[in-house]
Length: 201
Image (tube, rainbow, N blue to C red; front, side, top):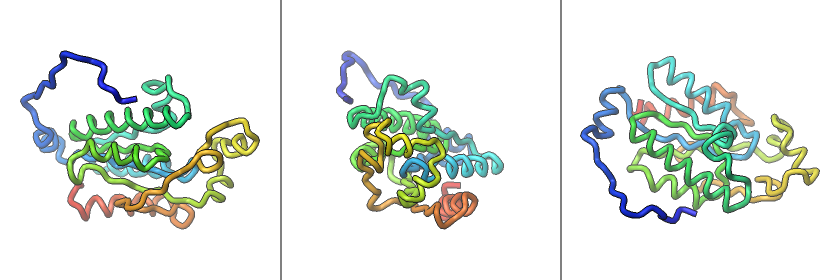
């Protein structure tokens, strides 16, 4: 779906580099890519991390799956092809935000390894941090904050990740969170500690 249709276009390089913007903001521009099943806690942890960034004076923004589907990706459904395009677009947006020097947090199920890899390949070395928000399917289904698992089990929602559509677990994520064992605050601290260790914040 990512075929180049436009012709006669030229990339324009500006005078200000990513490093210039990072210096202005006093931080490193990176993408924190939260992935996991529905109900695993991706958005909850991402927003907790964003809150810590704000309190510390870091410029960041959360790109949330449901929110993006209200606007930028409102034309996409949940077929494998639409899921691929959904993540392709978000990968591009996250890359732009990262180049702007922001700390970008994406919260998407992003079930396919190949799609997450394509998003990673847009970034410079060290600018993409995959965060696997692990929670057993049974616990996600027990939580069911949006009632989606119940609808999926009833056949109301087709192609639902974890039930009738696959989720491919990350093989080598930079960070693995276990939200069934650790609190939101503890998970956020794991992310912050990693970023501090790497000198990102």
